[in-house]
Image (cartoon, rainbow, N blue to C red; front, top):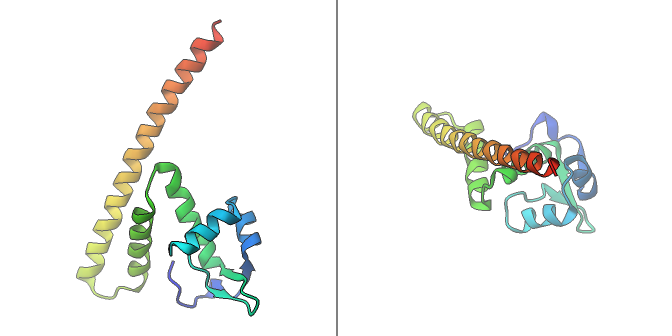
Length: 132
């Protein structure tokens, strides 16, 4: 997740390809850049955003959090934890980061359960309408 060089960063793409590969709009990706949650890895001389495979992975985490109702601040916090976990050498600090990650996992699980309940109610409603 971090912006440090890795083997997946050899290939780059422009925002259009990133949008196509993630199913997100250019506007959404630009917004994430502007708020600092997904800054472009680089820019061309012409000012075009350039992204890497690591950026794509980061954006997919964001994309998966959004339907669960996580805020931009929560997304930023989670990405910070994931970045720190990749770099952390201190076992005590890594344990604390894993605890924070577990809290996000628990929140995601709870939010998913609420979504399942909502979908069940929607299915019941559709069944009622189908009777008429």
